[in-house]
Image (cartoon, rainbow, N blue to C red; front, side, top):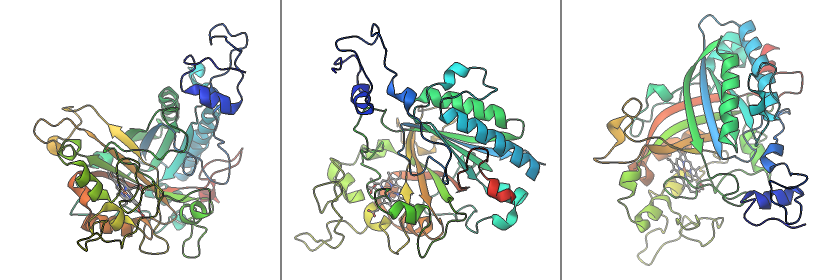
Length: 409
Ligand code: HEM
């Protein structure tokens, strides 16, 4: 079996690992049995005890859609909405058009599509206040750093859509919003991206728009850390419901214009890691453990007191979070949408991070980290939180059930 160099581009390696057959020497166009492009087969299971889209690998594109329920919506209405959205999401993620799809041809490439549901306070207030997790409320204000804009805060129902194909996302978004529109209105949509599928080997830690390797220290499914810190199978943590977790979304503006004025050593000092491969300043490889006590010849710690990783590193047995964020990059000088506030004169950045933190309990795990960072973190020189929302992610469901069903029992 040979592959046509070039003709298949980045997909060739993936096709090879999937065992897809390509006729020797044939071009894609005249191959007698054209192979299915791999993203057409890339399905992430929808049903299960936990929702997909948390510990599943993060595909290239994401849409975070926050909906507000219409006033007067009752528990029956919420249930109907969740049932239909679940059914639509289950179909779309498997590459099948929902019954009401007017463009069913657009639903055929699942491309790792996941749809993950998150609940804001109001869903609990309407359906079952007794089940509302105590932590489900807006985070306290971080006065030294926050410049929140209401257009990016809160929401009753979150739909997190991730896919390796932006086109797939567009269609999935439209289908779900059509279903939801009689009962809700869109509060905000945040669109994010990482490297395109095939641009980098699978499993490579993402980079953010500062150029940093971002996501090195994270819970993993290769050991029990994901299970413990994200799903709450931990002596000192508890999931709000079995199979459930939480999501904190912080929209963080990153000022690429002022970042451009700092040199490489200053940038590396601010985080405590190098920019080449993300290794800590006390090591050489990305996953070398950071030595926070190592000192230089002058007696100063190599990783500075104000370095992001020193301030963010866990100070208790539970302070571990799953960071699974996405970059955003919007048109500059967009008079209708963009706050001029973050621009330096002649600046050309309207970029940042949709910072997503998943953990069993945001108050015990996320909050202490954020409090320390708000107090002191050199990265704050270039970053400004402009949006904030907290959601309870319910358990997954089995076929025939619906996401959120446990609230109704
Ligand atoms: C680590 C960037 C905001 C928590 C890191 C690293 C980078 C980074 C480059 C080092 C590599 C890694 O382990 O991923 C950023 C940027 C931010 C941001 C650019 C804002 C735009 C935040 C926020 C939090 C946070 C808001 C939580 C409140 C962490 C944690 C680590 C980390 C827990 C790992 C620390 C350790 O080494 O143990 N971040 N970060 N970061 N960040 Fe951030």
